[in-house]
Length: 350
Ligand SMILES: [Zn+2]
Image (cartoon, rainbow, N blue to C red; front, side, top):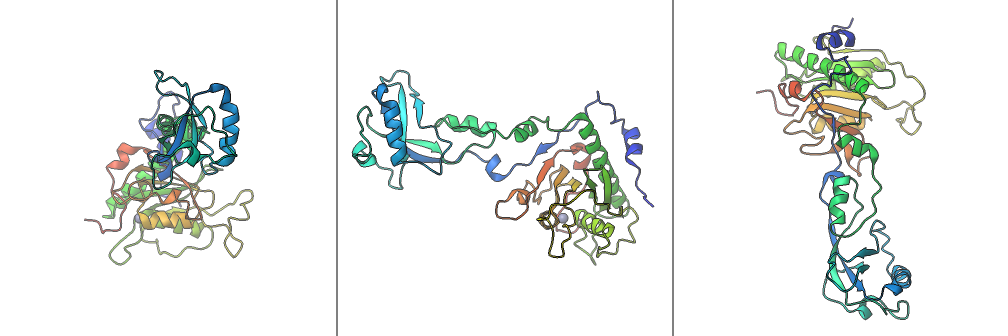
């Protein structure tokens, strides 16, 4: 028996089903360090093109000598940033070494590979070391040196707050309302008010609803850990005794379609949360975030950050190139309601 109200009941209560009425929250992507960080610069040598008729020949010869394989995003030629200068173009020659001293054309461009006719005295210029990943990084990068930009349209739309349709937002709100309900059940029992829901986005089916069950005897039963265990229980596994917590429930697993072969453990079974979404009222701590990496969750939606959160605040464990699973994280779903609930963390409830 499922003690939680159904999605339709929640929808009726909150009147969130009306497509005209935009819910007052925004789902914002939690980007990787590389996506959200400032543009990193490295010094390079450039030179003015004094004879424009030599540009294409110089471009070919300089690129052959210094191909810049790690910086394919850098354009080789830019208009002179100072219109008052006699030359109208500048050419990127090569990256500067650690010495960063002034060099002559002869030192930078060996003869006979490059005929330096038409180039002026080299100068040092900071250039973006990596391709820009977001539009704001691109805007910053191009103030230093022109770069190409292969825009990740999903990230751009997500940053503009228009990644999800009104229908998707209504479903997201309903799932988070269920997580808030679970958190309130925990609070009414004197437990830490953190709630979570696992959903199969392919069917919209809620597979697990859980709240923080930690106590001095079992201090690690955070809401996300409880939910992962409940999903495992739906698959015939599970380890925790959650019988004393009636608000924690699960639905038996029905795996529709095929799960990708690579995403299986050594027994040939898919990892416990492969393809699933987690909704959680507050940002998961490092333990929960790593458990979500291990369980191969697809996306995590959380309402408000936690001071020790590991999906944006202290760490971004969902977007690390050195871990073998990455997932998308979004914050801000029903943020105002979730902010009034407890944060997730490893300390005991005060
Ligand atoms: Zn936790």
